[in-house]
Image 1 (tube, one colour):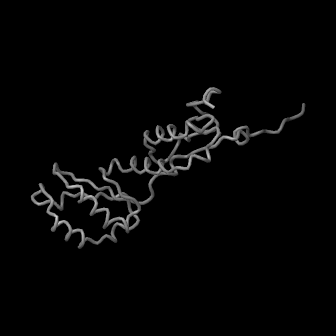
Image 2: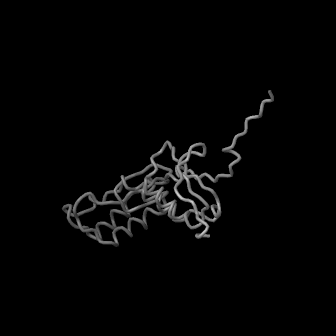
Image 3: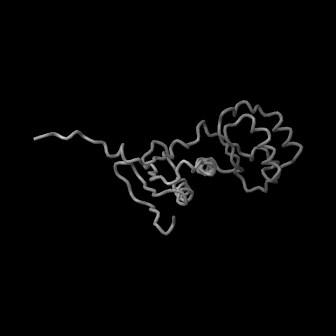
Length: 173
């Protein structure tokens, strides 16, 4: 009996794999709570706030991700967030207005908004399912929404075991 050589059909399948874990934000996440800048934990005084931001050692945030929020029920003027961004931007890897727990989701959505989907045109795509870092469900929803107009098909999982999610019909072409 003649033995047939093993053929890796997955490797030869011409599937385009996207690993969303690669978009996970790099760098430490640091909370930036505006509560400490409030007068009596109620209001933000512009002059005092400007002075405090000017005196802050922003170098401590170099290469880190900054989640800007206020942990008290205070009305924060919109210009306050702009001032924080002005001071932080030269140092931080990324900055977002959110609770620290929400930062990863916001970072994913921001990266997916600029993800170059042109390389996926007419491709059979597998969105990798297993990852060591927590990929938010919203990232899977967003990548599918963005890829659907250009992909031939979209699958979830690993190339050896996928769940079909979308397949373009002839009418859609």
